[in-house]
Amino acid sequence: MLSETQLTPDPARVADGWERRFIADGQRAKEMMALYRDLGFEVCADPITPEQVGDDCADCRLLMLLDFKTIYTRKAKFAP
Image 1 (cartoon, rainbow, N blue to C red):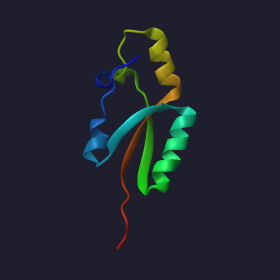
Image 2: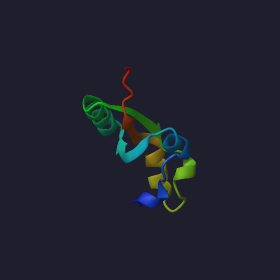
Image 3: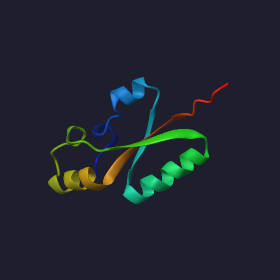
Image 4: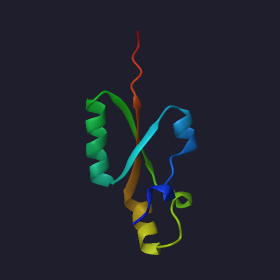
């Protein structure tokens, strides 16, 4: 299992106001994105990149790259 420190948030996303929430598999990512939207957040899901995953476990690395997403949220911007 990968530690939180092995999968750091995308600095560009953070600079743009996004908060990294968690990592989820494909179906769970879709469910959680819908939930966050219902709660009034903007949501995005970024694929795990090879640079984010260490070389410790080839099978883990392959699984993360194929199926898992990093979920980011930020407060929705409302027009006045």
